[in-house]
Length: 476
Image 1: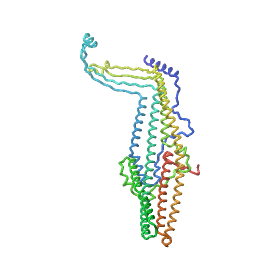
Image 2: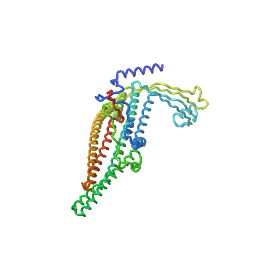
Image 3: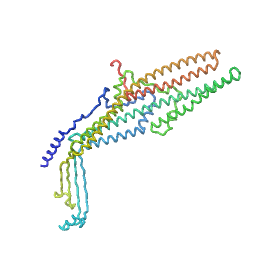
Image 4: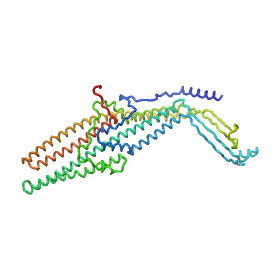
């Protein structure tokens, strides 16, 4: 009889749901876009190793292991994973065990105590209870399944957020390292310029004393020397700032990297060379690897699921429940048949007269989905712009680097000819010092161009999602 009543209840509920105005929603809604759908895999392979710099490899490894922001992102993944497990647990039956022992003394002035006293029942007694209670909400209309699917999408989004942060931190660390090496090289070149200017001052002073040049020539030489000196404090401060920046990225107190990264000063080769993400790539394909785009897509899917969850509030909820236990006034009768009590049944919860609030909840969920959809589309558009900007910038940086290299080669050749002429006595020493100054200035610009090209390649790799491949030209 109880089973037939439960079947009747389920049939009636299903009939109500069949006439509900709520439309079935697809499990995964994707936005309309002319950009290919992103893949679920976010690759942030060790692209920085292509620089061939063991110091940079060690820095990036430390950043990815100890950075505090990345640890916070890992904690968010743990939270999202817990929420996904909780949503899955909601779909399963729940059971509780309970036991109690009580000493009860009824008031004779209370209705129950007075009635019991009139019937000759004891005023005080011991009450022992033990049992198990189980309940299970039947997911007839898919609300719980949607909640679990949304939680899994949130977990996926958090995972890709962490991957995006790993990519960003590796790129930031590599960029800071390249800039540090550039500043160190610039500082060494500036110190050479100061030394060269000091020689020029002494030479001009000698010529002034001998009456070969006017006194104003010495003032000009001193001004040029002081200008060269004035560049040193700013460069030293910038070197320290970049070293401190790397320390912070590695989750360490500032100052530790200043000594560790002091090597290589003055060596232009210490500036990492440009890495090549490939010239025959298809940006639209590689853009799918961007973890920020994947995370935005997963949040859009989660928001769509939560619209379905909100729509599910129009439907009734059916739960099954049962209780099996013992209640006795004495421990000796705890396991006798007379002390056993059992109950079972089904419950129905339906917000039939609360549809105005449900309407608001649905409108809120749809608004959040619209926001997530707009953010997803925005992420796709931004990714496209990043790829185009990065590849264009990389090409221009390579051209600038090649031009600076040609300039240094030409000025170096000119300086060599002037040195040869000086040894023959055809030109003065001041001409040699001036030629050296031109070479040093051009070398300074070459160091900047070399660093900018390396940083442009880092930006390109970051725009392409971290990993990169080169297509086989023979196979298209």
